[in-house]
Amino acid sequence: MTKEKSAISPTREDDYPEWYQQVIKAADLAENSPVRGCMVIKPWGYGIWETIQRQLDDRIKATGHENAYFPLFIPLSFFEKEAAHVEGFAKECAVVTHHRLEEKDGRLIPAGPLEEPLVVRPTSETIIGDSFSRWVESYRDLPLLINQWANVVRWEMRPRIFLRTTEFLWQEGHTAHATHEEALQETLTMLEVYRSFVEDVLAIPVIVGEKSPGERFPGAVSTFTLEAMMQDRKALQSCTSHYLGQNFAKASNIRFSNKEGQLEYAYTTSWGMTTRLIGSLIMCHGDDDGLRLPPRIAHKQIVIIPVIPKPELEEAILQYAENLAAELRKQTFYGKSLSVHIDKRDKRGGEKNWEWIKKGIPLRLEVGPRDLEAQAVMVARRDQSPKDKQAMPMQQFVQDAASILEEIQQTYYAQAKAYRDAHIYKHLETFEQMRAFFTSKNEDKPEIHGGFVLAKWCGDPATEEMLSDLKVTIRCLPLNQSGTKGRCILTGKEATIDAIFAKSY
Image (cartoon, rainbow, N blue to C red; front, side, top):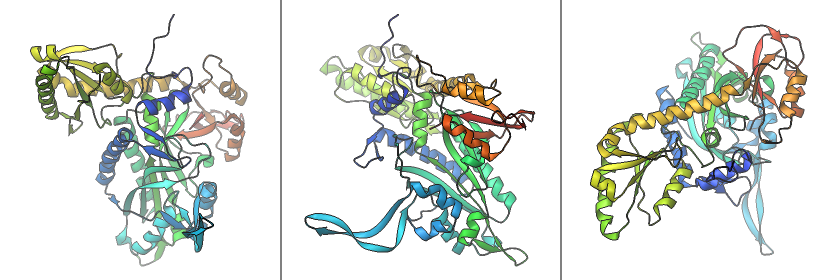
C-alpha cells in the first residue's frame, strides 16, 4: 500500500528528531543563530511565545504577584554562598571575566580584567535573594511575591531549538514567606497555576508530581513538576515549582522580625516556565503535515484566503473577506475577540493553503466568486485531513466559529491524553524487565522510546544511579499516589511509592 504523501519529510515514524526540526523550519518558527546553541525566534514562533506570556502573566498576577526585573550578571561570590546550588549549575555557567576589548595586531582581544567574575544568569535565586535581604525587615513585609520575565544562559553541550538552547526565554517567580506552611502552599499553588495553563490552554495532558532527590533543583528542599509525554514517548518537563525552605534565605541573609520581635530566616520559593513549552506544543500535537496549534494559544486563529480567478473580481472578493473578518472579530473565544488574518499575498491559493497548514492555524477559510454569490465560505479545520473542506453559509459560520474552535481545542487534548494513557505501562515489576523495556530494539520504529513506566520505588536516592546506563530517570513521584504496597522495581524491596520512569528531553 502506497503511503499518503505528507507536507513534512521525514515523517514522525521515519525519523522523529529530524521531523521535529523540519516542522520548525516549515512552520517558520525559529532558526539557529551564528552563536552556537542559540536561536533566532521568528515572528510566527515569537507570536506563540507572546500569547503564552500574556495568558500566563494574567494568571500569575491574579494570584497576587508583581513583575520586577533583576540583573543579567551575577557576582560569582553570590553563587558560592549556596554550595548545592553552585555545584548543580557550575558546568552550565557562562562567565564574564573582562570588561572591554582592545585592538592588538589587527585583532580585538579581551582586556580590562574584572575584579570579580560575573556569571551570566542561569537562574536568579542568588541575585534576587540579595534584593530580598534588603526588602524584608519585618513580618509585615511578608509574603513578598515577585515574578520576572527574562532570558537565561545555560551552556548546552547538545542544543536543540526550543528544547535545549544556550540562551532561552523564561518566566521565574520568587517569593518569601514567614512560615514553612505558607511557603509550601505557595509552591503548590503555582504548580496548579501551571497545570491549569498547560492543560487548559496548551491542551497538553501532564502528570503532576514531586521530583526524586536525584532530579531535584540544586539547593531546594522539594521540587514539583509537570511531566508530559511527547509522540516519541519521551517525557518533557513542562514547568517546575521549588520549595527552597530556609536554604537560600540563610545564604542571602533574608531575615525578618517576627511578631514577638525575634529575628528568623524567611522561607522562600521559586518556580518557572520557558520557551521549551513551544517545543512541547510541536511534539505533543504536530503531525506529518506540520504544526497544529490549539486555538486557545494560537495568536492567529482563523486565516481567510481570497481566491481571485480574474483581476476584475479582486475588489469585490477582498471586500467580502474584509466584511467576513469584521463579523468574526465581533465574536469572542476564551474571553477574547477572535483573531482573524486575511492573506492578501500575491501567491497561488494552493501554496498559501499549505503554508497555513504547516503553520498549524486552527481554521482556514477560502472565499471566491461562488462564495461571494452564495454568501458562503469554504471551511477547513486543522484537526481534519487537508482534503476535508465544508461549505457553510457565512452567517452560520460566524455564529459557529467559536464553538468549532473549542471542538478543535478539545480534540487535541483528547488525542494527546489518549496517546499518553495508552503508553503508560504498569506491568513491569523487576529491573531486568525495565532494562528490556527500555533497551529492546524496534527495527521498524528505532526512535520510539518505550513510554512511561509506572512502578513502585523504595525511595532510596542511591538507587537512582542504577538507571543511568539506560538513560532513564525517575520523572516524578505522582502527587496522586495509590497508597498500595508492592516491590521496588529497582531493588525488589518492599515499597509504597508510585514513580514514573522514562527517557526524557
